[in-house]
Image 1 (cartoon, one colour):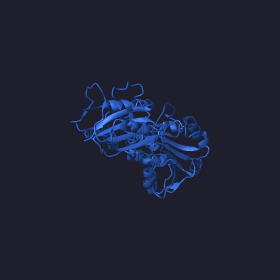
Image 2 (image 1 turned 90 degrees about the horizontal axis):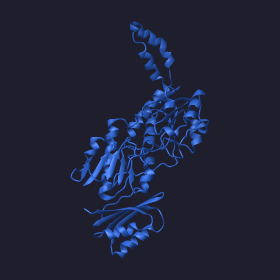
Image 3 (image 1 turned 135 degrees about the vertical axis):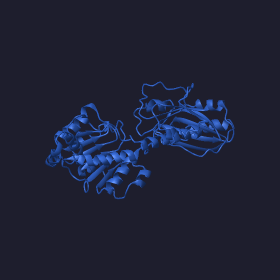
Image 4 (image 1 turned 90 degrees about the vertical axis):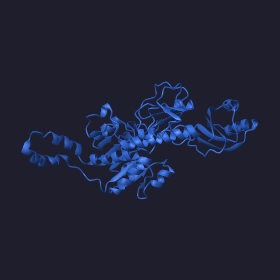
Length: 390
């Protein structure tokens, strides 16, 4: 029986996919095999005994101590693309509200309560204060062409915009889905100089923190609209506010408000609504559950942020999974242990991701704990599991 713990409210459409003859969700148990969460902050949380995997029902994993978990052999999953349509729709909406003073106009109109029959005339007189421009024919720059960025780029084309994309690390799957009409920027500098609108769709890490800073703002067209539905830390807020005062940036729409942005001129702070739709929550939960069950039952890894994707059909009587540091001769040492114990390998796969690697090894026959101990004694091995074939 696998024990699953949830740290947030997870959609029933996902949780109901668990086979309750093999899984117990949020039961009192001495060990926890896997955790599913959304935005719960795990950094100060004690790691449950026996934890094998953590699935974030969403794309960002900043709320999970990924580095610590990697060293402890805990596989961390996310669900890229599951909430992409929800975020994309909010980005498209923001193209309009950054162009037309819709929010201000609505707030002003609400102030006309009590004016009675004067309201229509006051509206006609005051509407000139809330004029804006159309997005058709304007140029949108999409920085980051993952699942969301590709959808935004394609739909912006359908709205009549010219679209320029930049992503030096675009995946093959994303490239297949991107319209051929999206222009490729040879450099970030080229994109920033041409665009009337810029939307960010990139991860937040040490290399992208404050990606939009004074230097990059200086490259932008005057009056540009900047949209951020990726992560708040991508934008240097001090540089942003100076750019607004200097009328370089006309509007900033973000799904990641902070204290210094609230009530600020020409900033539209949205309360992190990107994935806040029932459909997105259901899709993320379904993907998270499917990934966790596949990992627990077969050892297959898909959409992990700390260990490589690695999957194959089970071929032998027993499967050994091994996570290790990505160092030379690791596969050779493991194979030597198996050969010394007269175990025949039916099939195997090894994949690496940065400093870490993962192995799936199917064996024709049973595997004893002594064999596993010998493998675990190899310098660089972080974790092992035995999975009985079906």
